[in-house]
Image 1: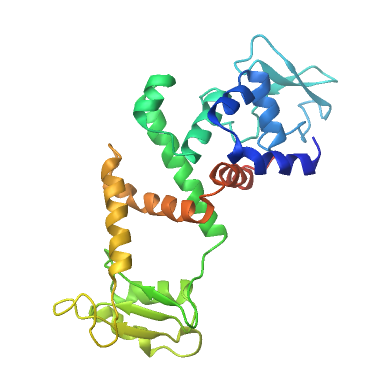
Image 2: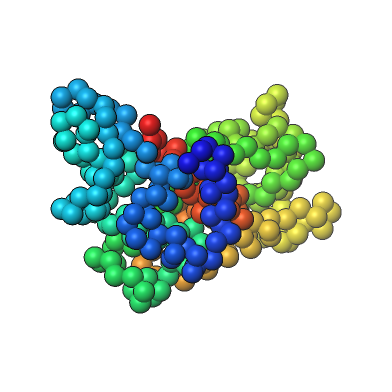
Length: 279
């Protein structure tokens, strides 16, 4: 498949419905074709066999768990079709991995749905996969950090677990553009926000929550971020079995969906491509 067709398939992933998805990967061969066409499995191996040859072709193999292997045209040695790919460390069938990817991206991945329609080895398999997907979201933001705000922009800060000045101010300096107006409460660590110069220059407006939720003079408030935080905690509470230590990954997923909510499947596959580069 050409690069243009590869891109076209990727950009169409979020337009297919559930029935079309099932048809697209209804056999192992179709699963492998799909993975090759979206860049998760290569069309050949780009490394020599034990004898130094590099003449790999894929072919069927009745003994292989994936039904297909790479076979060297010179010495007939073989390697698994998932060698050096996104799938190489998984014990799940390729179709199971693709289904979990699709379901997570499209948010139809409730445990009840997966238990009813798909049989996985254990409940922890599904939990581990969701954690893996969230980790990939986090790695995206590490590769492409988001910097927000700027002149004429307003940022609200709500309570965080560690909000001493030594923790808070470097984060603001790294991710908030100079000139941003920052709304906060009267927590002492926020006092240094307005003291910066140059690239660390901000305007800090304060609301005294012991007196008002909205400052009657400046209209300063933090109600938007507080409401967002309440919604996030409610959503997390509805996800059974999620430990408090995973809160950070849920926040990362929320940010990722805010950015890619219109094309989640396409961008999750792109994240896999960047993490597991196929030569």
